[in-house]
Image 1: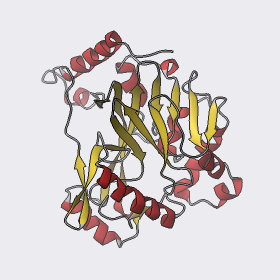
Image 2: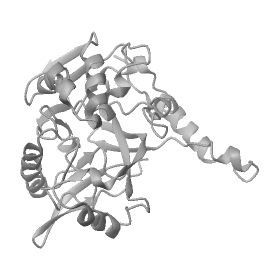
Image 3: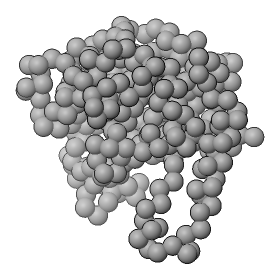
Length: 320
């Protein structure tokens, strides 16, 4: 199967370096605003290489968070210098490219340009020397549209033609239910529309429960944020990293407040129960995690301090 060779990665990173070295002093102001550098971060788990890729961001109202009064949540974001003057905060979208030496696996597929500040995933992959046809599998944490939109081209075809797409069966059933789609609030309408397209993909693999998906990746039950929300544990050489999707959103609220959720969750009680189970366990295990919406690149650990839980970002790693 296709894999990233060292030469291909070297070419990709050389391109990144060249972009970063682009002289801006001679550019007109209008030209400078058009320079967009690919946003990546790479680390290893054993011999498996994981590259965090940013699809972009949106500024969303802090009022979308539930479980506590909005002014209280706004104060928490302000303490982290994350509350913007208009009452929003900047929500990033991270996906992960996993290279185990034999297969290239993409975890989640991004918002794909559904907003003007997203849709960078394809360009970042290009800079890395990866084409859509090189991806062997796509694993989806859950079927909210900011995780699935990149699976489908504007023409409605499979964006990664050689990839099997793995999604928990419960999420496929939920996001293709016509009755639920009709009754869904506006904030979720697009997720149901994209979900219908994704369910029609020819290489969709619906799976149940915790199971091994590749030699290095296994699915972990994190259901609650959606009925089929799953994590993915990457393990090799005695090391591991767990992709936890939308189990955490921002250090201002998570992991300290398991009661705070977001309006996208169809069952807030189930989502809170998942967080109550995951957060203490991750702290006890000192597990290395990666979360879609935590500040990029989203690698970190949950640690216990006094009577509470805190997010400890993982140190930046340089490989040589």
